[in-house]
Image (cartoon, rainbow, N blue to C red):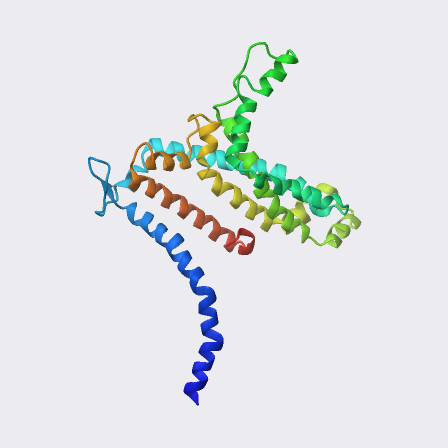
Amino acid sequence: MKGKNSKHEFRSNTLPAMVMVGPVSLLLLFLVAAPLLLVAVMSFCGTDEYYNVVYSFTADNYSKLLSLDYIRIYARSLMIAFITTLICVLLGFPFAYFIARTKSRKKKLLYMLVIIPFWTNSLIRIYGWRSFLGNSGWLVKSLQFLNIIKEPVDFLYNTGTTVLGMVYCFVPFMVLPLYTSIEKLDGSLLEASSDLGARPLSTLFEVILPLTSGGIFSGCIMVFIPCLGYFFVSNILGGGNTDMIGNLIERQFKSANNWPLGAALSIILILLTLLLVKLYQKLGGDMDSLGV
């Protein structure tokens, strides 16, 4: 009887679970875990005179990453990512607050305005900014028409345009978690703050921001980490003058043909991502809001 019961439990409970979870687990194993393991192994390999990967253990790739030239690029990457994240917070929070607290029928329309950019490839949109900011673009022609400038001015290929492109790409990633966090905010707390005589700024800093800190931090992670790897933005709008970590990785796998060094840079970026996610978890953040 026990044997029959165990077989029945296996068929009714375990077998359906294995059928449902098994294919997904195998898919994740071959498409996520195996490539990451290969990148980790390759980061400790070297290259021969023909730039072929030599599978012999070496830590030279990580020691090269400590050179002054690389450290400067790390610092520039972190600076651009930080500025981008800060601007996204300053722009995204008021917009998300307005969408979350509005009671009109326009709420769905405003929410759709945040989603619409995802319908178009970001690379195409960045090329649009390149055409707009170029020395023969609409911006220069408009300024010349208004007699603000006489000669064409090229606004491209600097840190400012790189930050502009990053902000344009990542504002929706900041607005969505902020919207979710603000929408859960209890309106009675805001009314109580007002009844107790608190000014709007006091309510903002003492009630709203502490209660929505999880959404703010979640949005910051969703902006800061991808910003380090969006190499095409700095390539197109920065013109190679604002190299970031993503540009280094792309260059090692393409023009430099040094895959082990590119793999080491990728591992550093992955570790930085895990560190920030762990910090977010320690601060009591909801991992579901990060899609983890």
